[in-house]
Image 1 (tube, rainbow, N blue to C red):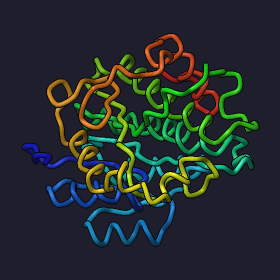
Image 2 (cartoon, rainbow, N blue to C red):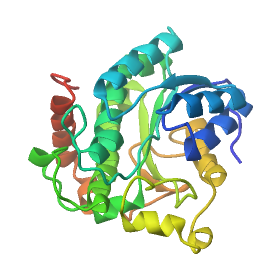
Image 3 (cartoon, rainbow, N blue to C red):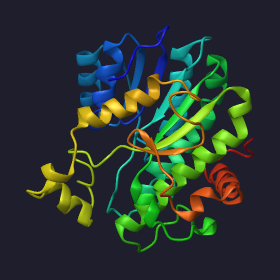
Length: 287
């Protein structure tokens, strides 16, 4: 179980309309934290907010203009005190090869480009919070990622859904490395984690083997509940960087893991990905 820190925290939690995010929202609100939840579905997000006492915000990460609007709304809601924790939990694996309205492959945009943009736009509010943290839900699927081709980043192509998803989850870890390198000295810590194989509607919008596994009779034998995984996310959110977890690292559940794709430790690649992502999301330059 997580423990309540000495003061309530202002937490932004994306992907919170169901599954892990909804479970963590309930747990964090019960501990007395102020939780600003973000979901794609207005009705589902508002239902979680009513149940948990969180504050609801709606945005579709398949549209970067909605991410920009969301960043403004969250910054205004947080006020001068800023945001203590940003939990980039929104994501999924998608089989639709139709480009988003922004021209990108859907899985890459929802899992990487949109969280990258949101994180950058919320940096002033994170700095205001003092000792803020950015927690990103990645996956052990990142181990399977092929060599990243930054010139192809986000470009729709005929790749298997799991191939694209693994690249996006590797990008999550590389973004975490960059956040730690760039902003740890300013008091912003960052961590990425694998939440376990969770019983949820994950992969429901894809034709991948993951979808079949999650729907098979064997699923209860190899998966954990959303509440159990939500406890891991809550543990990271309420923890103290440097004591509970180490900034810049990748965790599998509550343990730091060295079983990562070799690219995840390439800081030059992390920097190149950061700059390419900034270019693609309309951030002329990024620290």
